[in-house]
Length: 195
Image (spheres, one colour):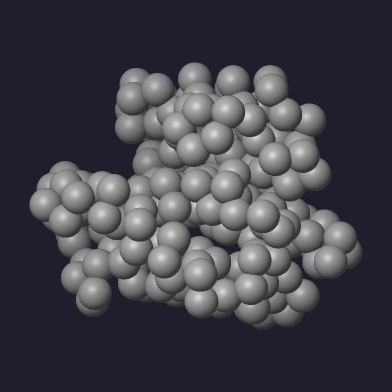
């Protein structure tokens, strides 16, 4: 059983985030999904991004990091889009991390640390035509991370959806979400075996 901290995307803690967490729980893992927005849920990405900007992106990231301090360090950190920032920071800088999954976003090496920690597996998932992922530099960052670390896997799916793995969203892609979930469960099993 792996211990997972899952950070939601810019829309907030949607039903799809809860559903994804529940799939991981049904596989035997312990999953905590903190609400970084204090109950607010937005109907589109622009509204959610505007709200995160009002709060301050650094503030949202710091909140995720502070929440993680309540848990033992041997965690797998999963982030969807906006949630990648605290997930990636924790995986790169908090000793004891067992793994990370970065979905639809990736910060460049050097943002939190100059390299990815050895023996900490990381998966980066994204769609190859998602404008948020491709045009804002996340794909480049993911490719660089995958090239720099033997423990990093970049998995690209055909399509332009950003929140493709959130079943409550209109751009949900069942095939891509199923493939992503299968790979995440493999990483969690690996993290469990390493523990």
